[in-house]
Image (cartoon, rainbow over all chains, first blue to last red; front, side, top):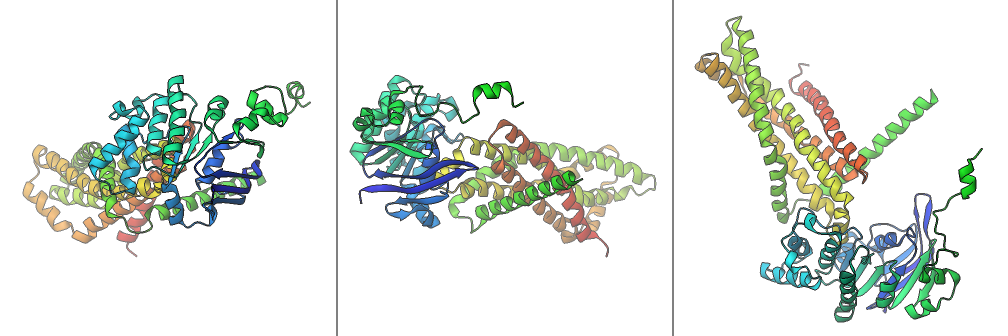
Length: 265
Length: 259
């Protein structure tokens, strides 16, 4: 099977608002798949659906060919153990040091010896350039550093699937380059399947094998970075070039401005 | 009128749904036996909610014991019954004031802290990422805190009653000059193991359950905003205090009511 995750005809509502409208997409095994789209199109929601935290209103999410919603509690936990997730808000455990944060998944899921855990944690922290920060508390880290610690924690158990939610936001250029390399490396050296949600076009294009652009609940463009850059439809073209004017709306749905300002009377 | 009825109805439904969510939280956190690996987590929480509440418990206990003893002694002395100070003090503390005041202090000191801690963990997505790691936050975060509350509050209640009696002794015997023999023997004769100490401890256990349950639920259910958090911590103290007082009346009725 060459797709680790297949999403078929996904429909999802948040209250009255439709987030996904009969959307389908595949995440091929061993590749870097990127999901791009304007803010508020439900990219994060999609990651939470794949992680099993939100239930789709309709459609199926297949993981290794198994329906996520039909999984037993134990099967879901087993899947999640092989899942690395990087949240937009690092979500470090504030009562634990940097070292203990990275060690956490190892401590709860494995019986490794203390020395082995120490070595593994230091290696993971070294990979994100924060071996020296091991004794700091999460509150002592900058936002960008916290994100990198969270990344080290996410890869602590060498997951099969890594999901990144906006990994580049708030990173300085050096850290950004390091992150791009790291994501690529994890993918190449360990064969990790990566799913990346981002709207940093430049970085995303540089590492993704396959890109989906979603807007208004639908996939509006899919393909390799080159294919998308060629820009088939106006919507894709607008997004890839970051134009303000085009079919993708910049404004949250609202009444006509003049109408709004003049009041309803 | 119909607006009033509607708002009462809405509030009632809100209450029912909160009760449902709270029950579900309890069930999902506490179902199944605790595992050995959880012992360390429970011990850490006993330190946080129990040990850290000791200072306020001891200080309050001493002063409440001292005041009670002063009142008892001066009133009883008018009838020449100052020897009954000891037994009066012990009964009031073991049956009522020990469990109730400790539970109220516990709600203010530990309950609100639990709510704020869990609420912030949820707001900062720490619970969510834990779930994504395949670790159930209800069993890892909520359950040890509930156990710690159930273990700590009865112990704190016992400490409260002991310190309060000591405060009473300091005032009645050492200061006002009551006869220590009468004080202690009255207490020994008048206090029964199950009737007074046992039932008081049962009360304390019930209060522990109520206060910790309210505290963790309020934290877990708090909207992830600043207002939501401040509301939730306030609610914890208000709701659990009211529950403790109301339940105390019911339990006293059941335990000591003469039907």
